[in-house]
Image 1 (tube, rainbow, N blue to C red):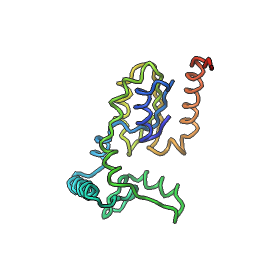
Image 2 (cartoon, rainbow, N blue to C red):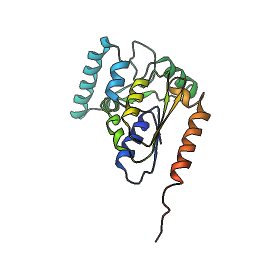
Image 3 (cartoon, rainbow, N blue to C red):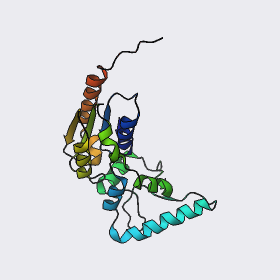
Amino acid sequence: MGFELAGGHAIVLGATEVRIKCVVSQVPTISGFEQWQRKVPPERIAAFELAQADAERALAAGGELRYQTSIGDDPADPALYSSPDAVRFYRDLVPPGRENNTVTMRSSRAARLYEPGGWIARISPKPLMMIVETGETVIPTDLQLTAFERALAPKELVLLPGGHFDAYKVHFEESSGAALSWFQTHLDKAPASTGS
């Protein structure tokens, strides 16, 4: 089971790790590139690319890692996530004075190049459940639904009527209940270990 970026990991591992018996992927990253293209305003793309290239060159020359703000809404300080629901979730979750609201530029670039959706059709015959919020602003709903369509059976789609972070708070009972039921159904069918 994984959420967001780790939801993408669950897709990749479900397709590649034989010990995994079933998968639940909640509001998963499907295409780092597509997500990035949609959230970065076109007028900021060139500056963002230059900043990442400079950070990579500096690191290759023995310099320190460079950081960027992870979540924020200040146009003068471009953040990795700037949607209103991301900012609200972060501010509600993290107590003042306890913030570490940065991410390395290298991590940001790696996330942009991450394409776990390409693995989704390879999960089968393992059962896949995807939990998707229909009012997404962080990971576009249409990317998730298109990926789900490419997945092979057995699969189940759980649609919740909210934004990206609502699955953790507003719809927690529905999302966690669906996942629990999926695991109970499909893990109980797993063959028992014979031991040694």
